[in-house]
Length: 170
Image (cartoon, rainbow, N blue to C red; front, top):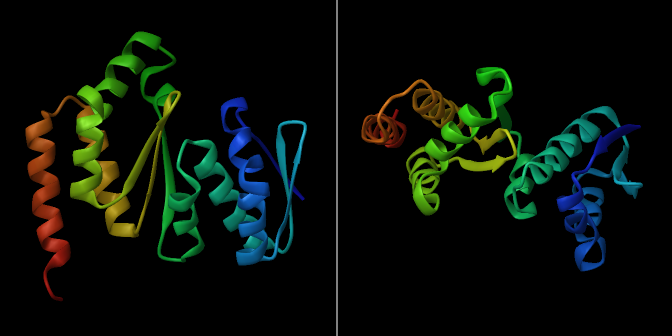
């Protein structure tokens, strides 16, 4: 059995709609999901539990369940960038760089998602990304470039070039 701590703000996600999230995880993966004292308990076979862990973690990082469910597909992955690692817990730096990724009224995040075709969620000090291998690579690289001080325009150009390359026939 695996146990995952659920942030207080996300508990309703597992309880809403008559337990739709645990039911969907059971239907898709054959795992048993229980919410016990603010933790999610997952029981099932190894591979199914591993996928359920990714889905639950994605929801815990702020993704809507519909986006997290993409992780049922073997071509989608979840990656998390922890800004505490980059900035050694400096609240001011973390806030500044989260703001660079989010942008004014969420515009930068929206452009990053549109150009990389990945899904991005900012939760506390973490930036979570869901996408295919190539989408994940592009989104991660774009975010890393922003964190290293690149201009938004330069990062967007990088993503536009890569998006065109991804769409070219092979």
